[in-house]
Picture 1 (cartoon, rainbow, N blue to C red):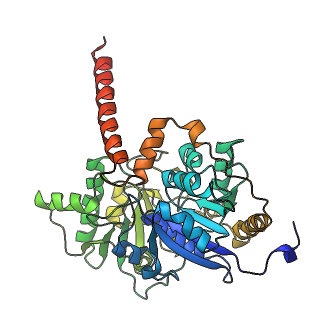
Picture 2 (picture 1 turned 60 degrees about the vertical axis):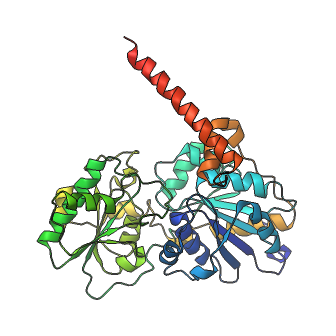
Length: 421
């Protein structure tokens, strides 16, 4: 390693951008864990899932960042922002499609580009190939357990991301203070899992049963977004809507069953137990010494994003939820899954070396494999998903028309297949 005296004296400058709710929370807390002498700023990337002002307040709760100073920036303005702020590092806290667009359209054309750091904001088992393809132009990729680092290194093989995976303690775990008399059971709702409406309703019915039999507890359905707000993942069956529907059908929901969009940190301070299908909230709860329950009724599989909890002794059933039974994980599971010693974290020294290489003009050009791996239709959908096209623009109109045609073709092909003997 080059001697530290070779590093210019000015502080390392980090510009962070996020494009959705879970990434904004992860970004803020990740920036807070960087050395105090580093100069950092935070921004929201304008797109299809930009957090609302209310979401921003909840997501930044407990961090050092003022929500009013988390300013929006568009894709076209980002390059100018990086140059004005003399960014050494771009911390790219975005979904895969947005990461690709920023790397290809903003970073690659720059004469003196910043170091590009990316990462995933929570549980990242199973490792996903598409996510690494979109982020393949990054210099450093942050993960949060030794198990994840091993899985992603195995996944990418000799791709450009090989050797870029760095370990960092999950930044928002264990930061809250416990209330003297906690009285909440917290259900951490997720947009994706479980997938079926009936499965999601079964969770609500079990929560109603718990709230009814334990009136001394507040049973909280913790959501990431209220009506009209976007999330990292699109939600087809929102839990508040399903609850309203069940009540309209005659289900009696007691007054201690509540829906909340407040910050996770705030609720964990009052929690006696956390239940989820696979949310990173379970890791936050364990760090805060709050027992958890991982619902296995709908399967323990990659599809349910909960195989990481195998061996933790925290997987249970809806009957456990009705009984208010929660568990702390097995000790031998912890070190390999998010609870490694802080001394194992290597993000800061590796990032410092990358900044040194940038200041000495030794950074290689970004090596994205998106155009090698993904066809034009997938890339077009990725642009749309990232909000790269303004509503009503020629590109947006063309995409809508193309999508309609492709859906029609797919429908006809499926009908032909079904009609074959």
